[in-house]
Length: 351
Image (cartoon, rainbow, N blue to C red; front, side, top):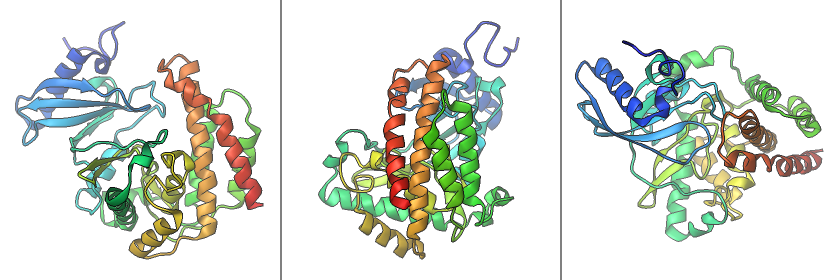
């Protein structure tokens, strides 16, 4: 007898129970490849505020013994989720110079695992984290190597010819003239959904953004969360860029504004604990083949701070609504006011 999505009445979704997850995933993969596939082991990673990430060991899946399973739960930070933007973008980037995990399968059908998911390559490496002073340990030749990879990868992403791939459909309705405002609209809608109380500074910042939106020099794939903490390092090199859930088509300077946030400097004065702002821009411009307008960068720095404040609001909303009981959620909520103070200073400087 087939179980309904998420299991029988009163049961937790399939992805919440390791044994049911193993069985359901094995059934799905067996049907997808036309042969018996067994999921030998599922190990959930404790890190992350949004998607559930698991390492899975497979038997019978062609050419793959270890993989990463990503599941978008209904209580996640940015829920409701779709697996397809991340899956489609990573599929398109497989032939590019961007080091990204290879993706195998994906589905948004909740009848399979109880939530959207995709299966991807397991890439070896460790994740340098941006919190505290950990960035101070990235020094010398290691820092120079990682900085070179970090900047060149971003330039390669922004130079990637998305129009020559199935991602061309993403370009419908997106223009250099409206790319920035589309992102402002998107995040304002999230703000209205997540806010638990009035935030005058948010409205001030939104008004400033609407009055200062730049015209993009070009449209590119934008990672949306490009920073220290979202790549894997192996032997002093970046082995993969991770966490593509906010990927979209837009102004490439948006990624720079996010990477330049002080929150991701790991206790150092360097962009993502890797390079000075001057060196970062110089290297990026040389490889991307275009200058970065300082007015655009200022705009996206303010936008990124506001996006960060709204993300903290999402954490507060998840916790207050009883959807996510992780105590990191209310801890993130305490950062809303400090970020708004940063936004206020940035707007005063821009006046």
